[in-house]
Image (cartoon, rainbow, N blue to C red; front, side):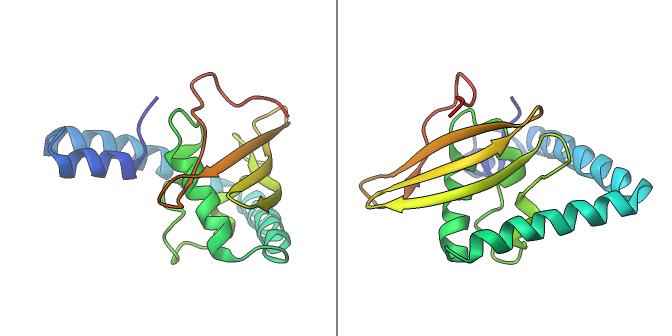
Length: 160
């Protein structure tokens, strides 16, 4: 599994990979992004509908939770070892990226948060992920620094 751009940048800054390897791996991400942009350009109506559906999901979440809480949960998922959709969530902590950009309603692989509940130091997410759409339950816990952390997904995402 290819590391996220954030993970690659961290490895580069630590000196674990050289500049050439970093640029090569980032180019893979760029090609995937350009492919998605081209697909959206080929079918602007489908892209517009996808955006509106994602905005609806974000708006629904924002009725019960703050932007910070949602981004914190998305960030925890993006940093979880083996989370299959981390490459779509790696920039969740960046406030300049609109919240709806992290949800994929019809575009494969699908991802959306159906509900989110905070109980003490635990956040429980109910998500819809992949096609055919599977509903999953993911429990995030706070560590000793009070940061949300997700479980390891070495076996994939488990059904709820």
